[in-house]
Length: 117
Length: 111
Image 1: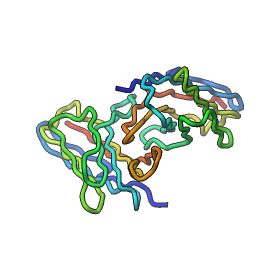
Image 2: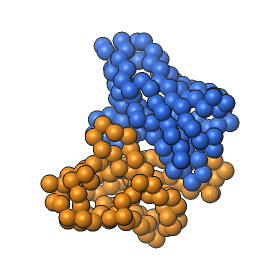
Image 3: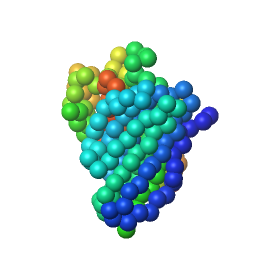
Image 4: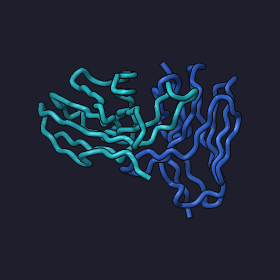
């Protein structure tokens, strides 16, 4: 079965640079979520989109922005990168909650490992 | 916002024994409780989930229980195997699925 595709898998940047992470959800999934996971930590919710509109916002820094496109893929744009931004960034997708009467499972991609030098 | 507490943070069991991981949540609006297994450097994988209208759910060696009144839910793994070794995260969510994770439990199954 098709899974969530994230690119790139690894990314090395220097401080103050910018980065763009991409996420392609499972076919027919219209909701995407972004998480940041530091070493030894649990995933922290950043932001989510449903039908190309932001549906929820978590602990996403103002230096980061994201959007979902008409084909439902999403991009996380990160600017003025800091050492503390080094982490695994996961994207997850699901069917829209509004379409169903109950929450739908989120399926995670393999993540992008971002290293800031 | 939602707060999910998970314990223990580490758990070692002998192969064949059972493992139990417990979580509590704070927001009574939470109605969906997934459990994820994450191996080192890999993505979280959904292993089982339970909704608030169900008290227990089982899938082969894995079972989850939910006590809505006490806001407790637990993961039970029976007949543990070395490949069960991983970090397990409980989570709680509601509405448009803003998921809050517990801190994770590192399970080690000793052969």
